[in-house]
Image (cartoon, rainbow, N blue to C red):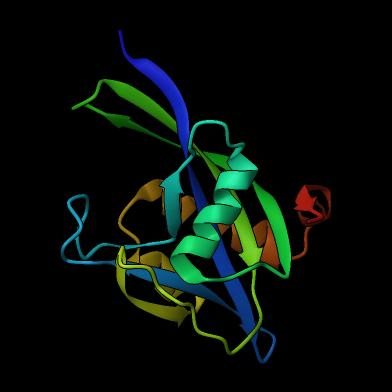
Length: 155
């Protein structure tokens, strides 16, 4: 019987340039064993003793160097199945707004980055769950719907 786990967190990072949202896409290094060269949002493991929130902020800092100016829990859970491990993963997703016209300090896990408009960012992503996460962030958080107010985390 498959196990169900929630030990991964993702962070959709965005900023504004001339009032237009841009989304941070990270390209995994060619040397990475898992999904080399794939474009993604910030993604990482929740370590023992960490909350999902703590892990998301740590991963954001490790992979980009950013401390968010605003932060939200995204009203969406990414779900995927690993055949190799017979595990159903539930991934907690956050959104981070960072200062405009700044560049991330990449970890060795990523070789490139770029700031992209919504449609281009979606085209670059590989996984449907991450695409859907960016869509929800764009519609509900960046779009300023009531969900943004209710899901903002005051750090």
